[in-house]
Image 1 (cartoon, helix red, strand yellow):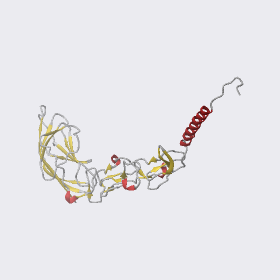
Image 2 (image 1 turned 120 degrees about the vertical axis):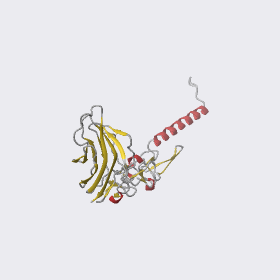
Image 3 (image 1 turned 120 degrees about the horizontal axis):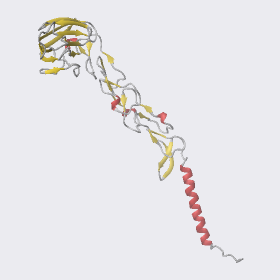
Image 4 (image 1 turned 90 degrees about the vertical axis):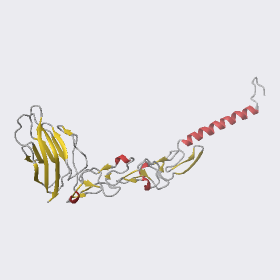
Length: 292
């Protein structure tokens, strides 16, 4: 029995075998974790490695340990989904920020006056305002509709078009304002109200809201010229233009003139005809158009 060697006690041998068994069990568990569940299933929890079907709003590929949420802008109302392609996209005209959604009810419709033409959108900013000349009457629109004949809209994000019987202009006051070349935007005025402004040399102002249809427009104003070198002004002070069709108005005051506006979207441009030396005071300016 001795043979010159010391024998291992039986108790130590059993202890060593126990540690070997524990190590093999842990290794087997780790190997199993790498690919334990079939497609469409995942572990109950990190400490419970029982595979169960993925719930609504989630999916799992073959061998995955966990179910993954459908991304924002999508949803899935089925259990056991095995790929992201089974997550349904929110339809056009809607959006959703919810990840793991279990129904289409999380898809929110864009407001009236806006549209959204793509599916699967995850942010409200993807809803775009309807451009001028169009409208969006309902929520969740994928496109805007053109205003019908005899109506118009000048504002972005309109939910309805205005009839020509309602043709009125915005309420921005210009009294005391000096307009330079290329003024900072369209300047409109409520029909029936007067306004004063100045036009620098060669400058112009634009009014963007005459009716779309053919119209008869009455324009009235008093004008005068000024400037340190404006000694002997010649010719009319203003040009009144509907797009490319222009009319010269007044030597010193146009007072009142009626012009025929052609059909189609047009702007009224009031331009200083003096390209050298003379600025123009425009006083008591008013214009009103009625469809014909």
